[in-house]
Image (cartoon, rainbow, N blue to C red):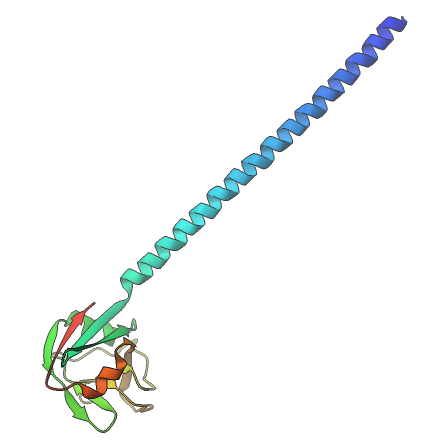
Length: 173
């Protein structure tokens, strides 16, 4: 009887050890699988974020204004007036001085100002003055006025606005 009892005790210990070993093995496997799943999620998130950034860059409307061998780049907002201007490009058009802080030009078609923010113009603001139908490039601070809508802001070359003259070329970037 003693042998059977010892045999049963040894068998129980072996089964318990095997059970503990199996649980540890399964726990390690689950942890590793969780790490792999998390890495997959992290990579997917980075890829998705990269795609979103690329889409935003592709949807940004930028225009270049060339005058006297110099280029000024504006980034347009998503208002209807900015979209209307963008759709009329490219344009070769005369630019005029107005006041002591802005240059203006008249696009061929009037711009739709619905869903377009009002402007609080400063140096580098691109705006549309609806009552006269002209696009305004500010090189000094102006402020706001009834009927003045913001189209966008300068990205580079804002220092060239003041010296624009004659015929300018406006293109999509």
